[in-house]
Length: 436
Image 1 (tube, rainbow, N blue to C red):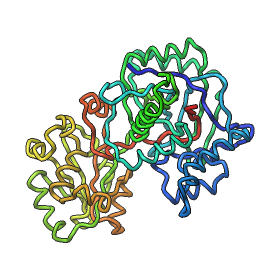
Image 2 (tube, rainbow, N blue to C red):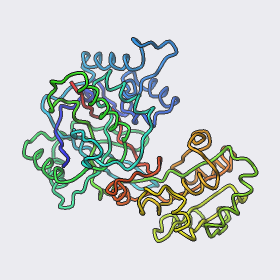
Image 3 (cartoon, rainbow, N blue to C red):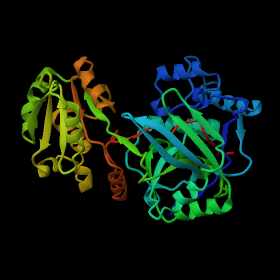
Image 4 (cartoon, helix red, strand yellow):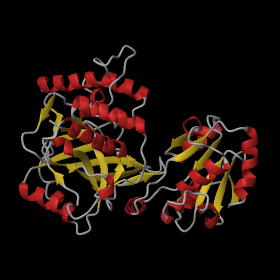
């Protein structure tokens, strides 16, 4: 099914760039204007200049953030700031990080994967996409002719064939080693042995791949591929633009952390909020928990990790109290969702929150969504944003498990937008793929 290939990776020359922690950056979709500014000042060689360059008021068709990124890439290659590996390789990437006081390692392999249309079910999505981010990434692809940040995708290594090949690489010296003050560190090894590459490729060829993070980048690569073929009828099927760079991680990897995007709401009228409790009571059993109760956060965590029934936590209706919502009648809420969604979709916390509470009970239409909805990946911060009166309501949801992501994708369904946050995102700037 999935076809993977090694590639000649481009990465920083560590003889010239000693501290990679000042150079690599997060993917474009997490770079706020403030962070973008900080990254520009952090180093003149920070990868943000390629991944998500600054737009200027005086930009033109001939001089804009995309053309400047392309010029910067060529300059860094000429100066030797960036180097291109001579031999195609698969890159083993160990990403070390801390979450809730515990240390983790997420192991992935950075490869090129042949682009396949969604309907072939070789590469399977689990979330929908928006037009604007895709337009931005397609413009960058045309300007740079490079995949600057990897798509994160998942695979099943049931017979541990891939992991055994990767374990054999650890005794060699990594070509990239970096750590940061935030507690994250990275080791990258290069795998060039034909036997090892063939073993990995044959193991993955038997199964589909599941996109965890990077749906917009994948769809942008598909659009770019179609546009390239439209420009010429004599292009080889092995042309580089027929492939896209991915970091592949085993479903069972202990470092695969999925955070829940809790919902934050503002802009609701007083009458809407006043009537919400009665509307909720028609579908949920409601229990009040005082915020001051000892061990409250452990109790919230326990409630949200139980999988035998839908439980949500709402804050903002009862002063200084959390409301625990226990679903009473699944059939009733199921009928309030679009009929074409799968059964597993309809039973998820995030689906019930978005379709039933936000759309039906609060009347949030897609046109008003951006003005009234925000997301937080930390339950304490979500509650504090209501206490600080930045938002009126916080809805805490359970994290979607990796096996649910797989089941949704296998069913040909897609989760509501902002249903999963794979933490942390693979950085941009460790290794990237040129399409020329």
